[in-house]
Amino acid sequence: MIGYAIFGFFEGYTPIFALGTIVWNIWQIPMFLLLGVLCAVFGLLYIFTFYFCRDRFSAAFKRYNLPVYLKPVSGAILLGILVLTLSFISPDGEVLGLACLGSSYGFDQLMIYSMVPIVVLIFLPFFKILATSLTLGSGGSGGVFAPGLTIGAGIGGALGMGLHLLNPSYVPIETVPVFVIVGMISLFGAVANAPIAVLIMVVEMVGSITILVPAMAAVGVSNLLTGEETIFRSQIPTKAQSGAHRGEYNKKVLEHLLVRDSMIPRQNVVTLSPSDPSMKVSDLIATTAHNGFPVLDGDRLVGIITNRDTRNNSASGEATFSVRGAMTRNLIVVYPESSLEEALEIMVNQEINHLPVVERESPDRLVGFLSRTDIMQVYIRSTHPV
Image (cartoon, rainbow, N blue to C red; front, side):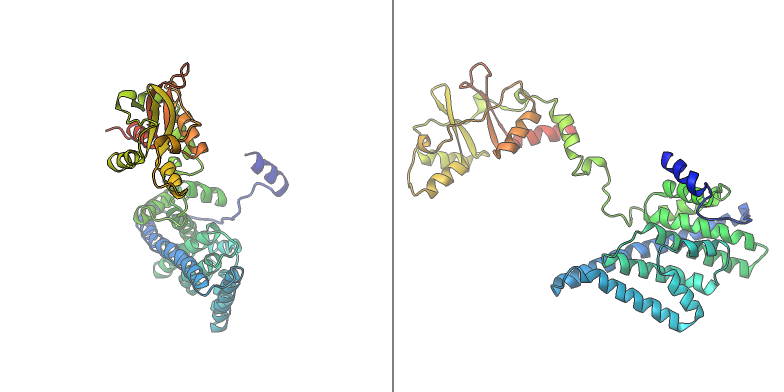
């Protein structure tokens, strides 16, 4: 609001698109529903062409090991060939070629004023989709919003003008701009999977709420038909699946769970003695689901031995060894009252998979054993209750 107020103070508060006299009536609603269907079809074509071009450019440059900086250049060359070809076909083709360039807001305004030939309106969606896909698919600069409005405006304009030419009494010339604007909303609302946001945005851009009902009808149909397809495929379904925010969700669960409630209790922990031979370590690793074991000298915790320790010791050239010679003596431990969040942070920071659980007052007294697998199991049970 502050940004809009400052901008409007200097540039004025007029909408980006100017509207003349527009009219519509309830008997035209079926045609707006038809417009929604057409926008859904072209929206799917827009999405398919956009990603097809992007994937083909990437595959070609990877296959032939071409410099990446040539990719947008190749897209620009192809776009230039397209525009020049259209320009040589006919005067209408030249207009169509110009409409394929840039954001086309000025061309959108001409369509709202019903100043664009119907031949151009019919072919505009196809070539604008191709031009945008060549530009962005090759890595060129730009966005999909403004082209999406132009594509939708062309669809709406072609349908509105065609109906006007067929039956002027049913669709007077004053109704054609309504088809243009509703086409903008229906097309991009569908491809962006944001019908309400685009509906409000375009209504603000034209400065009129009189088109709200036909726009709601059309964008509802187009969004329903396109389903989950969207041009913004990098969007994730929920915030919880975002890598940037995943930690927020994990911590909210793990910080309230204690080690004592997740650890393997002392009586169930498989332990080794410093004097045990290497064969026993290998057998335990092979027959249990664990690859790390606490080492007890009597009741006193003196170390931990893992699969990594046995491999390192074997690599040193010793064919046989005792647990005492291979175990890790500098223990990293956790306490029963610690949270699972703390335990997991220790494991991640120290690059280990197991933690002996000891009493804070007696750090050599083992009371349990905790692994990353234990934490994962508790987390899954807490977040996905049966």
